[in-house]
Length: 174
Image (cartoon, rainbow, N blue to C red; front, side, top):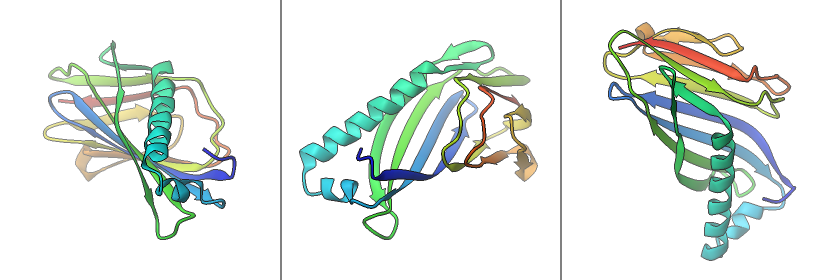
């Protein structure tokens, strides 16, 4: 990625299913004044090389985290990455699909993520969607959050300059 490519915003949508599968769609929006990504579109090999590089980079960040469901470590994996543009060639975004599975049980379940605290460089929003009979009970995210749709959706936002706590926990019922 060129040094002229600057992150603007992040958005994550995480879908939790009753069978324990979690699918994450994470999108990062950028400003690209030198059209680095736009210019990759003309060279499929270089584009694929860049997408593989960012996928591997994301996977390395994920591998540094400890993600648990009900106290047992799970292993999120980047399954797909793509590049798109939001209305102009200098507004690229990169989308990652990340999957993992945990063992859920009847009653209360706990998702935990332990990671290196960081200073946030851009605003981002995260939405968790709990399907079927799953229902959010509460969370610790280091920020204010909302539980919506009768416990089916948990959402929160952070802002540029925020310091993440290094630990997140979501309690939900099956």
